Image 1 (cartoon, rainbow, N blue to C red):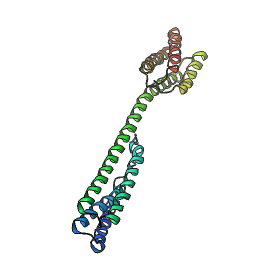
Image 2: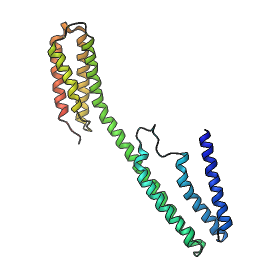
Image 3: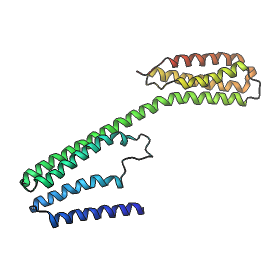
Image 4: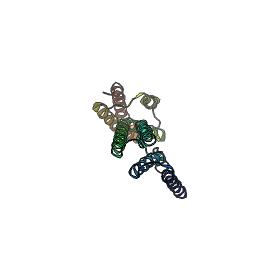
Length: 233
């Protein structure tokens, strides 16, 4: 809280100095003087805004603002340089109307830059969400196999070395599964999770369910092979 108050105080002090400098040394007509103060204040705030509202928020999972920084800061630099050139080199010789039109056009350019950066940010966010959805299915497969492995490890009965080894291998093979945006991949992932979840329950009575375990383990292995061969569109 103290840091934010101090930041506000520093920004306001800088703005006051900027206005004072124009009033004391600016050789402009009153209308042009006010316009120049407004324009330079906008430029000043553009470069100090990040002190109060940082563009990079580490708590934001999508980090969409990072993806839009290039467009935004390019727009800010171009606008700032052009606006200040008009203020210090042309506003004293141009009419107020012409100066206002040029500064208005530059401000419109800045607004379009902001819109463009927001569009890029939305695209980054959409890509992140899509990737999260794609990874969710693969993650669910891995969780199901980990649960199965836990059931095997915690079983009070002697588990066949063949079954134990194949379950371990199944878990290791999932590392080679890549997320996919294919609807077919999603269906296969759900089917795999369902089969493996049933399989995990069988190990609660291993000796009674060995035949079923063998059948469902083969089914899980077959589903894994099918999913391995499905890629993104």
